[in-house]
Image (cartoon, rainbow over all chains, first blue to last red; front, side, top):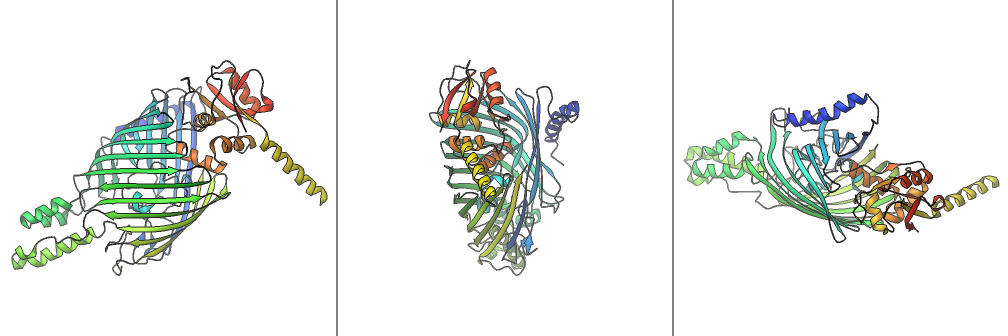
Length: 416
Length: 140
């Protein structure tokens, strides 16, 4: 269920879309209004040589390549459909539904976006509803993988903040400064994502500003987003730590992921004159908790030879906070408390070792096989660093830290 | 066999002729706009710009996907192959940030609509040019 305060917005948007739909009863075009239906999808197979953990593109859409399956279809496969209504004047509405694998193990389609837009002038537009977060260079359209050259956006950066939309409002303003065209977007909203059947992560008071500038073949986008994260995870661990007096209280306050301010800053540039492209991006995601404070970035380039585009990417994520801490000072504890203190320190360090430090080198080729479909093959050499498990999930008992592995992906992306 | 080869040759020549056809970007003869640069035209057709340089609102008209004139137009004006154009519109459409220009079946249809409405802009085969529209850019 969406949060109560978000529900009316979604209903309003659904209503705005459905009322004219009923009125036109299946006609694709009303008197002035236009309906547009389209979609996108990806069918992919991914194989990982690391058998003691699963490779995933994103913590919210867990892949199963490696430990769970030899070949996983869940890493990138998805299907999206979008219905747009434009009244021929100032108003338009969009509804996008995406089916992909969720943490709750299901493939149930979810409303990715549902918003109504009012075009105040050719320069200024306002939207209300569920809106794409303007994160990173490709954050808004990463799910429509056909628009990407590679199989997926680099996991080191894009998995650091996996949420893709927010329920709220935004305003977008276009302006020119000489030969530089700019679009500045401000947003306010919140979101709620299920982590399991009973737990949700919520982000409140998401406030953001994003600016995209283009000059000829160059595009630069900078984004800053701030919000309050409510992640009621591992409450047993943190309440147990609090039993250990002031030092336990300090550790709990430092690392619990609930009610923490989170900040995302990113800047990226791409240069694409047509025959080749180069892009690079760097971002910092600070959750001020055991979810980490990470800096990630990548550089990528490709060359277009007819229908084929070979490309290469180097991507890296580092943690700005330690992956191992001393934890509770056991020497200050009465002897009977030491085993419990040791156990909690072990659990805490187990969590901190999941704050990804990793780099990967990817080589791939995209083949524009048809006018609306692209076939991609990609090989990634992935190196989790500093005793962490990198971006891997579902870590198995026999997992060996510090071991690099290979990932092979084949995907077919299409739009319709 | 020889007939087949000749046939292929003829088709290749025709395709070459179509690709080499001169394109002109046109506005209504009633529009105050007299000339545009290739980058300005590209911005309008990629919905990066929604106004003419003089400030008037502008709406682009396209030719059908797969037509030789269209492929030639985007290759020369925006440096984009049909696959890159498809990827470009995928980004725009699936971010809710725009829809590609309305498509008309041929140069004559574009000319007819542009002639009647000063907010419209289109590109047509030079042979379809007449006094109802004004060429603002010749695409080589």
